[in-house]
Length: 185
Image (cartoon, rainbow, N blue to C red; front, side):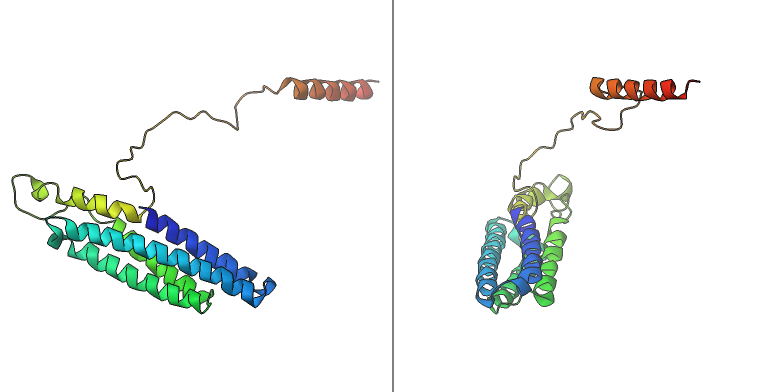
C-alpha cells in the first residue's frame, strides 16, 4: 500500500520543484528532476512487484481487472520518468502523476468480498483475500495485517466552564479590581 502514498508525495515534490524553478540554476533544476525521476522508477518497481505477486497466485486469472489497472499505472509511471528526465516538472508531469494516483485508487477500491464463484462459500473462498495481500503494497498503510483500534481521545480545547489557569485568574482579578476601584465615586 506504499506506492499510492509515495506517488502522492512525488507529485507534491514535483509541484514544489516547478514552483522553485525560477529561483534555481538550470543545472540544479535538472539535477532535482532527475532525482524525482529515480524515485518514480522505484515506485514503478513496487507496482511491478505487486503485479508479479498477483501472477503467482493459483487463481491469478480471476484478477484481470486489477492487473489491467496496474499495467496502466506502470505505463503512466514510465511516462512520468520520461518527462522528469527532460526535465519537465510542469503541468504535463503533474497531470500524469495525478493519473497514476487515480488508477492506484481504482485498484485499491476493488471489492474485497469478490473473488469469483465456485466452492461452498460465497465468492469461492479466499481468492480476493489473497489478492488483497498483493495489492496491499500499492496504497496507504504498507502493513497488510494492520488493525485499527478505536481509542478515547480527550478534548484538548474548548473546555466548557469558567475555569482559567491560576496565572490568568490572578491577572483577571487584578484587572477587574482596578476597574471597579476607578469606577467608584
